[in-house]
Length: 72
Image: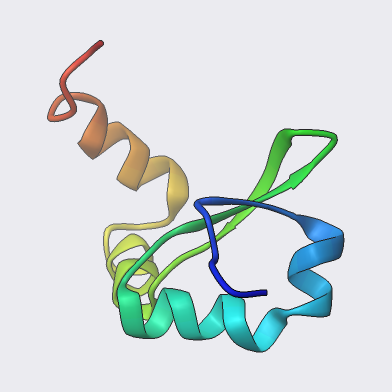
C-alpha cells in the first residue's frame, strides 16, 4: 500500500495495518474503514481520542461539535 486515502476498505486496512497506523500517527490523518463503500469505523490520532474521552465520550463530543461545524 503506497498511499493511504481517507477511505480504506477493511480488508485492505487489515493487510496493511502498519501503514494505516503510521498514516494516522505521523501524518495526523483520520482513516475511515469501509465495507462495501460504507463507513464502518475510523482510526484517529490518539490525541483526538483522548479529547473525546475527556469530554465524556463520542456522544458528548458530537454534541459539542454540532454547534461549531459549518453545514454544507
